[in-house]
Length: 197
Length: 416
Image (cartoon, rainbow over all chains, first blue to last red; front, side, top):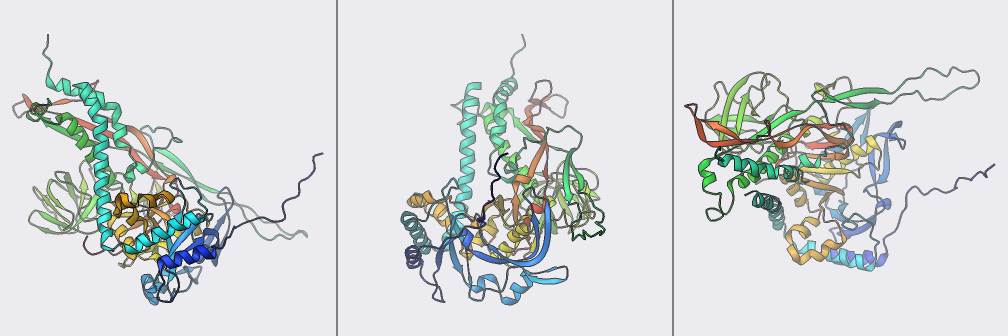
């Protein structure tokens, strides 16, 4: 009779990491401070950055079958994937609208229960996702000194850019998209028509 | 021996490029082609394609009294079947002999007319179908807000974005019951949201809608687009299912933008609705599909920095691209924007649940091997021109309307 294996006593459900103080300091220096004296930019581990989400939760098993429903507030990781470092940028409270607008927009009613779908109004602003530290193929990148240098350069670069560049950048991308299509089609058709003539 | 006609040589040229058409058509740069032809479904015939859906869970769970208590009855999973049947689209291209004669040799013109027309037609046909995939399945390309002479000012969204110059359009009454007639577009101004036509069909009034060519009868059916699949309506039908029967299960979670500008809160609300419905970790496949207007609004909030690095910096910042994907994101969800997308919406789509039921891949219309056809003049004789067509037959489906979310009624930023 094969020996019975004992299930592990500890199951890691959510891995958490603290941002190294040295990297935190470098990013803070590069990004500057907000009006409350807190950093403009910060680096957080996906599994450690939690946020309130309220409403009707439908829990499912691994096959997608519904196992329970509950109307409640849960504190869950704000960003996915959880196993990545994310760079956040501070957003001022006014970017969330007024407290009244916030309440009107984020209050959900489930089974007669009023619930704050995003928690309380961020009266001192909040940090929002700026970008995820991962390779162009979507692979994990550790938060090393080299990665930290890169984040600092990206943050500094971002601070130097005037907002007026944004619209031009979008227009330039659209023009390039059309040019790329045109060039690719030419490449395909030139050969075919040359051979057919 | 019959003399070889030039149109035969054009036919040979077109035949040569025939197998390249899918390559020109299937590029992942527009929503239509991001929605994949699924390998797990049979190529469909003229009968409906059936999509079995597990709509509601079954079983009764609860506390039990094992001291002789009644364990109660059970229940089973509710299944139903969504159905789609393909619709056909064509794109007709006419070339006069003069154009061909003037460009059929390198010393006369830099580009062969047939080649140029294939290229232009492919671009236009792709654009047409991509415009349709923004709509709600009835072919409506816009609503007339007011009429001045032969110019329609269109309600925004979508304004005049889904119409192109020289397109044949039809005007229907607001209930899509009465077809008032067709006309040709002679000018389009997407910024002013106006369309000018050659002759306004009789009876056309404000609030009438315009639809694309080829639709007939009341309540016409066209390509099922985003507005069809991403809806929180509880009446009407969706893929042959009655929405009223499954008002929760078939409704896509919605956040009302209330004519306000896009905020991080609205984005988080929409994404969280998917997380709550499907499980908190199930948003990894989402994309945020939106217009250039809302993309710009998101940029204006100043959350993201990747766009500046990718687009504004040119080669100077290429080293900054090495450590991240460069994809712009909304709260971590990659943004895909389109000039054709509805200007007041952001749609969060999980395209792994979307597919195309294809009866006919894009191809030249072919009759017994002939793909180029003569045009006849008023006398009954041949006209000095010929015509060829692109055709395709397919429909777009979505097997899980609750796997997405959308924000609508967003304010459109100034300047658009």
